[in-house]
Length: 309
Image 1 (cartoon, rainbow, N blue to C red):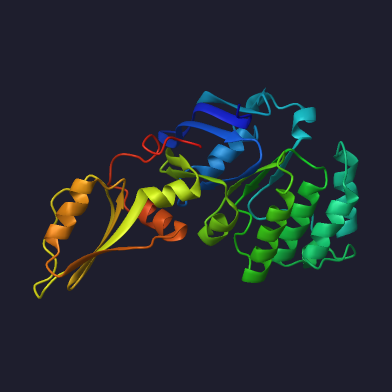
Image 2: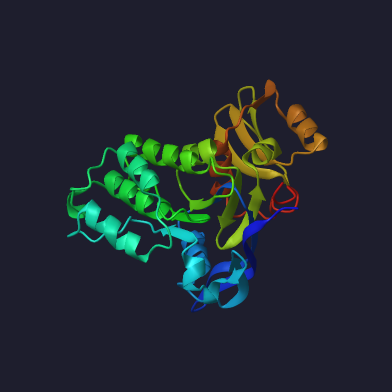
Protein backbone atom coordinates (compact mmCIF):
# COMPACT_ATOMS: atom_id res chain seq x y z
CA UNK A 1 0.00 0.00 0.00
CA UNK A 2 1.37 3.43 -0.98
CA UNK A 3 2.30 5.75 1.87
CA UNK A 4 1.88 9.47 1.22
CA UNK A 5 3.96 12.11 2.98
CA UNK A 6 1.88 14.97 1.61
CA UNK A 7 -1.76 15.19 0.51
CA UNK A 8 -4.06 18.03 -0.48
CA UNK A 9 -7.82 17.96 -0.94
CA UNK A 10 -9.33 20.75 -3.08
CA UNK A 11 -6.77 23.20 -1.72
CA UNK A 12 -7.74 26.68 -2.90
CA UNK A 13 -6.35 30.17 -2.40
CA UNK A 14 -7.75 33.49 -3.60
CA UNK A 15 -6.03 36.88 -3.49
CA UNK A 16 -8.98 39.23 -3.73
CA UNK A 17 -10.96 38.05 -6.76
CA UNK A 18 -7.99 36.25 -8.31
CA UNK A 19 -7.75 32.48 -7.83
CA UNK A 20 -4.06 31.56 -7.45
CA UNK A 21 -4.62 27.85 -6.65
CA UNK A 22 -7.87 26.16 -7.61
CA UNK A 23 -8.99 22.97 -5.83
CA UNK A 24 -5.59 21.31 -5.86
CA UNK A 25 -5.88 17.61 -4.99
CA UNK A 26 -2.46 16.01 -4.89
CA UNK A 27 -0.79 13.03 -3.22
CA UNK A 28 2.99 12.75 -2.94
CA UNK A 29 4.24 9.24 -2.12
CA UNK A 30 7.11 8.59 0.24
CA UNK A 31 10.49 8.21 -1.42
CA UNK A 32 11.84 9.72 -4.61
CA UNK A 33 11.55 13.11 -6.23
CA UNK A 34 8.31 14.91 -7.10
CA UNK A 35 8.54 17.92 -9.43
CA UNK A 36 5.94 20.69 -9.50
CA UNK A 37 5.96 22.44 -12.89
CA UNK A 38 4.23 25.39 -14.49
CA UNK A 39 4.73 28.87 -15.88
CA UNK A 40 5.27 31.93 -13.71
CA UNK A 41 2.00 32.66 -11.93
CA UNK A 42 0.75 29.08 -12.22
CA UNK A 43 0.35 28.82 -8.43
CA UNK A 44 3.38 26.71 -7.52
CA UNK A 45 4.86 28.99 -4.85
CA UNK A 46 1.42 29.78 -3.42
CA UNK A 47 0.74 26.04 -3.10
CA UNK A 48 4.11 25.47 -1.40
CA UNK A 49 3.53 28.34 1.03
CA UNK A 50 0.18 26.80 2.02
CA UNK A 51 1.83 23.42 2.50
CA UNK A 52 4.41 25.00 4.81
CA UNK A 53 1.69 26.73 6.82
CA UNK A 54 2.92 30.20 5.85
CA UNK A 55 -0.32 31.00 4.03
CA UNK A 56 -3.83 29.98 5.02
CA UNK A 57 -5.99 28.44 2.26
CA UNK A 58 -9.27 30.04 1.29
CA UNK A 59 -10.75 26.55 1.45
CA UNK A 60 -9.64 22.95 1.21
CA UNK A 61 -7.13 21.04 3.30
CA UNK A 62 -3.54 19.88 3.19
CA UNK A 63 -1.55 17.48 5.38
CA UNK A 64 2.17 16.80 5.72
CA UNK A 65 3.35 13.69 7.54
CA UNK A 66 -0.22 13.15 8.71
CA UNK A 67 -0.57 16.64 10.25
CA UNK A 68 -2.77 19.49 9.03
CA UNK A 69 -0.54 22.08 7.36
CA UNK A 70 -2.25 24.94 9.18
CA UNK A 71 -1.13 23.47 12.51
CA UNK A 72 2.38 22.08 12.02
CA UNK A 73 4.02 21.46 15.38
CA UNK A 74 7.75 22.08 16.03
CA UNK A 75 8.24 18.31 16.07
CA UNK A 76 6.68 17.95 12.60
CA UNK A 77 8.60 20.95 11.23
CA UNK A 78 11.77 19.26 12.48
CA UNK A 79 11.08 16.45 10.02
CA UNK A 80 10.69 18.88 7.09
CA UNK A 81 13.33 20.95 5.31
CA UNK A 82 12.32 24.00 3.30
CA UNK A 83 14.52 26.03 0.95
CA UNK A 84 12.83 29.15 -0.40
CA UNK A 85 13.43 30.71 -3.78
CA UNK A 86 16.42 33.05 -3.61
CA UNK A 87 18.39 31.08 -0.96
CA UNK A 88 18.16 33.58 1.91
CA UNK A 89 21.06 33.63 4.40
CA UNK A 90 22.12 36.11 7.08
CA UNK A 91 24.84 37.98 5.20
CA UNK A 92 26.96 38.86 8.25
CA UNK A 93 27.35 35.22 9.31
CA UNK A 94 30.07 32.82 8.22
CA UNK A 95 29.07 29.36 7.05
CA UNK A 96 30.31 27.99 10.40
CA UNK A 97 28.06 30.44 12.28
CA UNK A 98 25.10 29.53 10.09
CA UNK A 99 25.82 25.88 10.80
CA UNK A 100 25.84 26.43 14.57
CA UNK A 101 22.69 28.57 14.39
CA UNK A 102 20.84 25.81 12.50
CA UNK A 103 22.29 23.02 14.62
CA UNK A 104 21.04 24.61 17.83
CA UNK A 105 17.44 24.42 16.56
CA UNK A 106 17.68 20.96 14.96
CA UNK A 107 16.40 17.75 16.55
CA UNK A 108 19.41 15.91 15.08
CA UNK A 109 22.40 16.80 12.96
CA UNK A 110 24.43 14.74 10.46
CA UNK A 111 27.81 16.48 10.41
CA UNK A 112 29.19 14.09 7.80
CA UNK A 113 26.34 14.90 5.40
CA UNK A 114 26.70 18.64 6.03
CA UNK A 115 30.42 18.50 5.21
CA UNK A 116 29.80 16.33 2.14
CA UNK A 117 27.43 18.91 0.64
CA UNK A 118 29.83 21.79 1.41
CA UNK A 119 32.68 19.86 -0.20
CA UNK A 120 30.51 19.12 -3.22
CA UNK A 121 30.12 22.89 -3.72
CA UNK A 122 33.78 23.58 -2.81
CA UNK A 123 32.79 25.73 0.19
CA UNK A 124 34.90 26.72 3.19
CA UNK A 125 33.20 27.26 6.55
CA UNK A 126 35.12 30.52 7.07
CA UNK A 127 33.40 32.16 4.08
CA UNK A 128 30.85 34.87 4.86
CA UNK A 129 27.36 34.48 3.42
CA UNK A 130 27.39 38.02 2.04
CA UNK A 131 30.40 37.18 -0.15
CA UNK A 132 28.93 34.02 -1.67
CA UNK A 133 27.72 33.64 -5.25
CA UNK A 134 24.17 32.45 -5.96
CA UNK A 135 25.42 28.93 -6.54
CA UNK A 136 27.41 28.93 -3.31
CA UNK A 137 24.41 30.24 -1.36
CA UNK A 138 22.34 27.42 -2.87
CA UNK A 139 24.94 24.92 -1.67
CA UNK A 140 24.93 26.31 1.88
CA UNK A 141 21.12 26.33 2.01
CA UNK A 142 21.01 22.74 0.81
CA UNK A 143 23.63 21.65 3.36
CA UNK A 144 21.71 23.37 6.16
CA UNK A 145 18.46 21.78 4.99
CA UNK A 146 19.84 18.25 4.68
CA UNK A 147 21.99 17.97 7.81
CA UNK A 148 18.96 17.51 10.17
CA UNK A 149 18.08 14.45 8.02
CA UNK A 150 14.51 15.51 7.20
CA UNK A 151 11.97 13.04 5.86
CA UNK A 152 10.55 15.62 3.45
CA UNK A 153 12.57 18.28 1.61
CA UNK A 154 10.65 21.09 -0.12
CA UNK A 155 12.61 23.25 -2.57
CA UNK A 156 11.01 26.24 -4.29
CA UNK A 157 12.80 26.72 -7.64
CA UNK A 158 16.22 25.84 -6.14
CA UNK A 159 18.24 26.27 -9.37
CA UNK A 160 16.92 29.70 -10.38
CA UNK A 161 19.75 32.05 -11.34
CA UNK A 162 22.45 29.40 -11.00
CA UNK A 163 25.17 28.85 -13.59
CA UNK A 164 25.41 25.40 -15.25
CA UNK A 165 28.13 24.14 -12.89
CA UNK A 166 26.20 25.14 -9.76
CA UNK A 167 22.99 23.67 -11.20
CA UNK A 168 24.69 20.37 -11.82
CA UNK A 169 26.15 20.32 -8.31
CA UNK A 170 22.68 20.94 -6.85
CA UNK A 171 21.07 18.22 -8.95
CA UNK A 172 23.82 15.74 -8.06
CA UNK A 173 23.32 16.54 -4.38
CA UNK A 174 19.59 15.86 -4.76
CA UNK A 175 20.35 12.51 -6.37
CA UNK A 176 22.74 11.66 -3.55
CA UNK A 177 20.15 12.45 -0.90
CA UNK A 178 17.38 10.38 -2.47
CA UNK A 179 19.48 7.21 -2.36
CA UNK A 180 17.66 6.84 0.95
CA UNK A 181 14.22 5.85 -0.32
CA UNK A 182 12.53 6.95 2.93
CA UNK A 183 13.43 10.54 2.04
CA UNK A 184 11.17 12.55 -0.28
CA UNK A 185 11.92 15.71 -2.28
CA UNK A 186 9.20 18.03 -3.57
CA UNK A 187 10.56 20.81 -5.73
CA UNK A 188 9.30 23.36 -8.20
CA UNK A 189 11.44 24.25 -11.18
CA UNK A 190 11.63 25.84 -14.62
CA UNK A 191 14.76 23.86 -15.51
CA UNK A 192 13.14 20.99 -17.34
CA UNK A 193 16.36 19.21 -18.24
CA UNK A 194 17.10 18.97 -14.50
CA UNK A 195 13.58 17.65 -13.91
CA UNK A 196 14.10 14.99 -16.56
CA UNK A 197 17.26 13.83 -14.78
CA UNK A 198 15.89 13.53 -11.26
CA UNK A 199 12.07 13.43 -11.12
CA UNK A 200 10.16 10.22 -10.41
CA UNK A 201 6.82 12.05 -10.74
CA UNK A 202 5.70 15.35 -12.23
CA UNK A 203 2.69 17.57 -11.61
CA UNK A 204 1.92 20.41 -14.03
CA UNK A 205 -0.13 23.42 -12.98
CA UNK A 206 -1.72 25.86 -15.42
CA UNK A 207 -3.28 29.08 -14.11
CA UNK A 208 -3.91 27.57 -10.68
CA UNK A 209 -5.29 24.26 -11.94
CA UNK A 210 -3.59 20.88 -11.70
CA UNK A 211 -3.51 19.53 -15.27
CA UNK A 212 -1.06 16.63 -15.15
CA UNK A 213 0.05 14.22 -12.43
CA UNK A 214 2.05 11.16 -13.50
CA UNK A 215 5.52 9.77 -14.13
CA UNK A 216 7.74 11.51 -16.73
CA UNK A 217 7.67 8.37 -18.89
CA UNK A 218 3.90 8.28 -18.92
CA UNK A 219 3.74 11.95 -19.84
CA UNK A 220 6.10 11.43 -22.77
CA UNK A 221 4.18 8.34 -23.90
CA UNK A 222 0.90 10.24 -23.98
CA UNK A 223 2.25 13.10 -26.09
CA UNK A 224 3.34 12.81 -29.72
CA UNK A 225 4.84 15.31 -32.16
CA UNK A 226 4.04 15.15 -35.85
CA UNK A 227 5.54 16.91 -38.86
CA UNK A 228 3.24 17.21 -41.87
CA UNK A 229 4.84 18.31 -45.14
CA UNK A 230 2.93 19.86 -48.02
CA UNK A 231 3.42 20.76 -51.67
CA UNK A 232 3.62 24.40 -52.72
CA UNK A 233 0.69 26.36 -51.33
CA UNK A 234 1.44 25.47 -47.73
CA UNK A 235 -0.62 23.75 -45.06
CA UNK A 236 -4.38 24.25 -45.07
CA UNK A 237 -6.45 25.44 -42.12
CA UNK A 238 -7.08 22.65 -39.64
CA UNK A 239 -10.44 21.36 -38.59
CA UNK A 240 -10.83 21.14 -34.82
CA UNK A 241 -8.52 18.49 -33.34
CA UNK A 242 -9.53 17.74 -29.72
CA UNK A 243 -6.10 16.26 -28.91
CA UNK A 244 -4.15 19.28 -30.21
CA UNK A 245 -1.68 20.71 -27.67
CA UNK A 246 0.56 22.90 -29.82
CA UNK A 247 0.78 24.01 -33.45
CA UNK A 248 3.58 25.63 -35.44
CA UNK A 249 3.16 26.65 -39.09
CA UNK A 250 5.90 26.98 -41.69
CA UNK A 251 5.63 27.71 -45.45
CA UNK A 252 5.31 24.03 -46.40
CA UNK A 253 5.23 22.28 -43.02
CA UNK A 254 2.92 21.90 -40.06
CA UNK A 255 4.33 20.82 -36.67
CA UNK A 256 1.71 19.46 -34.27
CA UNK A 257 1.92 18.13 -30.72
CA UNK A 258 -0.99 15.93 -29.67
CA UNK A 259 -2.10 14.47 -26.34
CA UNK A 260 -3.64 10.99 -26.30
CA UNK A 261 -3.92 10.97 -30.11
CA UNK A 262 -6.49 8.47 -31.39
CA UNK A 263 -5.84 6.24 -34.43
CA UNK A 264 -8.61 8.15 -36.23
CA UNK A 265 -6.83 11.49 -35.68
CA UNK A 266 -3.49 10.10 -36.85
CA UNK A 267 -5.18 8.72 -39.97
CA UNK A 268 -6.66 12.16 -40.70
CA UNK A 269 -3.23 13.77 -40.39
CA UNK A 270 -1.72 11.24 -42.78
CA UNK A 271 -4.47 11.96 -45.29
CA UNK A 272 -4.10 15.74 -44.85
CA UNK A 273 -0.36 15.83 -45.58
CA UNK A 274 0.22 15.96 -49.35
CA UNK A 275 3.91 14.98 -49.15
CA UNK A 276 4.57 13.17 -45.86
CA UNK A 277 3.48 12.74 -42.24
CA UNK A 278 6.18 11.74 -39.77
CA UNK A 279 6.22 11.25 -36.01
CA UNK A 280 9.28 12.71 -34.25
CA UNK A 281 10.75 11.93 -30.81
CA UNK A 282 9.58 14.23 -28.03
CA UNK A 283 11.57 14.68 -24.81
CA UNK A 284 10.13 15.83 -21.50
CA UNK A 285 11.35 19.43 -21.84
CA UNK A 286 9.77 20.02 -25.25
CA UNK A 287 6.63 18.15 -24.24
CA UNK A 288 6.08 20.30 -21.14
CA UNK A 289 6.80 23.53 -23.04
CA UNK A 290 4.35 22.57 -25.78
CA UNK A 291 1.74 21.59 -23.22
CA UNK A 292 2.03 24.91 -21.40
CA UNK A 293 2.19 27.08 -24.50
CA UNK A 294 -1.49 27.03 -25.49
CA UNK A 295 -3.79 28.33 -22.76
CA UNK A 296 -6.88 28.25 -24.97
CA UNK A 297 -7.07 24.49 -25.15
CA UNK A 298 -9.61 22.74 -22.95
CA UNK A 299 -9.34 19.43 -21.17
CA UNK A 300 -6.60 17.91 -19.11
CA UNK A 301 -4.22 14.94 -19.07
CA UNK A 302 -4.82 14.42 -15.37
CA UNK A 303 -7.64 11.88 -15.55
CA UNK A 304 -6.67 10.17 -18.78
CA UNK A 305 -3.18 9.59 -17.40
CA UNK A 306 -4.51 8.00 -14.24
CA UNK A 307 -2.65 10.17 -11.73
CA UNK A 308 0.36 8.67 -10.00
CA UNK A 309 1.52 5.16 -10.77
